[in-house]
Image 1 (spheres, rainbow, N blue to C red):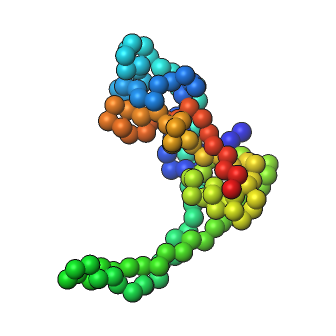
Image 2: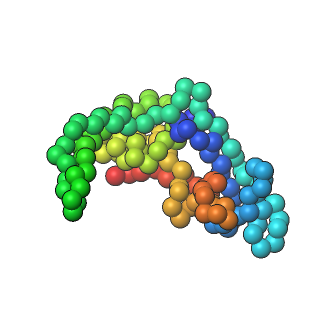
Length: 137
């Protein structure tokens, strides 16, 4: 079993799904043929909630742009410990990258491919993916 620890439902489409689909009321259609495309899997967000990097902000020196002073914060991230190896999870790319650096790429951590594997609606919004990523460094 894999737990979706992102805040969004994860929709996984067949590998041959086009990168753009027509989305209507939670259903998806091929943009040229009109044929309905059925996701192969939908994974709702885990009831325990999202796993994420903790953001810690401290005041920084403002930056001057022309006649304006723009506030700046120094942002640091606290990395939570990864789940036990027996628990497979789907998390954000930022968290998976942090875990890959600090814990040598845990094999049980996955990320939705929102790059070349992304499936978008006709307005360009991501509606799903055709694959997951495992970040190795």
